[in-house]
Image 1 (cartoon, rainbow over the protein chains, first blue to last red):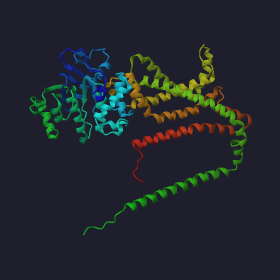
Image 2: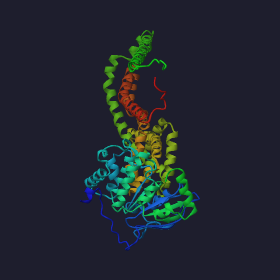
Image 3: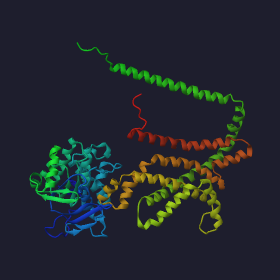
Image 4: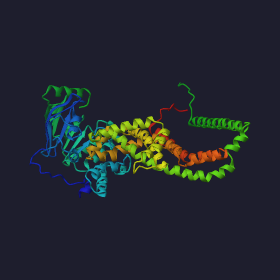
Length: 267
Length: 286
């Protein structure tokens, strides 16, 4: 099967990364908004084909962390490395780096004035300067894989929330990003629509995608993630395998957070 | 034994609906006939009607003047189309400069703010005078001296100020997350503006934008005060020469031929928007 048939365009990224370097590594990252420190020194590393789950209450800094990684926010201190290369050097043009990452938002953020297929191919055509027909073919193939081939010519507002989010994932996936950043992608969905989207992410993970996902779906994190990391108040409180964090947390804060979820019947 | 209710059938409801719609149609028909018919009758029986008819609705003077007025109107149409294009471009540039912070453009931003303040604050007719007589007085090589061009520029600058404010509102109505999504795809800020932000901004303000354009089609006539013989001016010359106002009516009719279709388009767009978003005036079924 060719890449276009698989719904992917662009060349697989083979940077001269040092062997064994994590795809993404973050060291001592801090970020504040208007004097309030939202991230207070984050360290983490995500290896090839790994899924890294960020859990924690709303306001703990999960979304901000993902936005910092995609260079949508300027960080205050620390470094982020993509394939061993620092990407947060002052003065570095963020545009080529963003092209290597795929970010999916909680609220989908599809472009309402463009058809589904044009949403999916915009990045490939405008940012990666790929051939129009090739991008379109790949986009249609990817939509077909996601079960959305019949909606390609619709405008996003004609789709259900679950379908819109799958389009948003296709949009982020099409150009074969080095890592997918998923920001609570099911939080804005009706409960019966969550399953489809999670199933899709599970598939992408099985195919070897590297991803960081902020999530409130603990069972999903247990299922898919290789590492789970609990964030509270801008700090990583505890990090480890899903079994360890979700079944036998060491830190009191993690235990409190999980206890609240159990009480709310969300675990 | 269960209570005996009187049940309303589907047919009962359909009959009630039909009755109501018949009543509505009858009421609107009758009131239209009464109001419009009464007004018409009142005007036609007024003692001054024959004189009015002779001076304002004379077939003879209409026939005599219409050709010249129509060719004058052609000047209006050309001016309108050219000014319109210029206004759109300049207004978009001003709106973008004012909305987005770029250090390089900071002086330009100050100029734009001053420009919009002044242009919105001076009566259009004064601007046209000042440009029409001021610019030729400068005697600068390369500056136009044709009153059509100068008047057109004055009008264009004036409208650019208004339209830039409409577009600015449109730009601010696009949610910031749209910009984030475009950048996350790897688009440059300029590409994000062009393909994601501006198209949505313009779409959001189409009705007020068209409103300004309807006003512009008519204000083109103001340029005639510094000389150009466009429709209103030609009509006025006829009127002054022959003491008959019919040519003014002819010019008015020509303007309506352009403005009414435009107004209908605006109405249609606004109506469609209301239908999509739901109206604030929804008072339940009637």
